[in-house]
Length: 258
Image 1: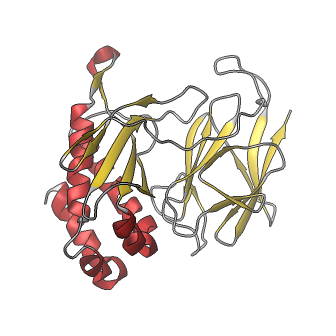
Image 2: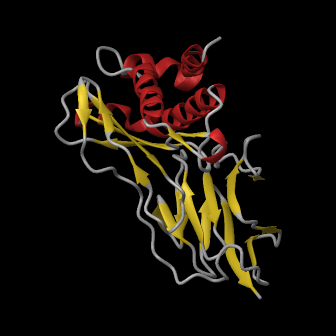
């Protein structure tokens, strides 16, 4: 079974077939996934050692009409698109930085049934991501790529490769401690999560923490119920010591010691 066939099969089980009604006569999720695959193919870069790097972040702009119809299902669709794109990239033996991220947004000026895919290599660190022009169904759109901005914190540890004694961790309300390692940590309740939390309000792949040795950036992965930091919903933000992270009914406090 191909990636596209598996994707269609999973869509059938989402919200009891509501996708078929939402997309009848307009843009269909399979068309979006096809465009994402073409973006990955079109923007390959060869790394040292012969590895092939492709974009890992895909922003889907839908027409205002399509976006309003899709809104109740956007988070679920984004999660399925990300999983299917990751499977496709894996089958091609390509490389990505971190996790595949998909975000669905409102694209002003797009006609009903039209969409735009903007792809980029997103590292989750301070360096601006390498961007690629987006594919517009019916043509290319070379507009500026969109990516979530995050606050530039002052850092709380030495830069990568310099060692140091910082103890960066998350502490739950019941006192459980989750140390953070360098690199990416996915939080969720699914098997693919590095930090699994038994909370039905948390998506299978809910959020990601990127620790570069200097700071930790928290990114929501298109979760159903969203990610809150200090009571504010966020897409991506650099954490400061003492920040309170809310995922579902779980509260985690960000701590830095040493």
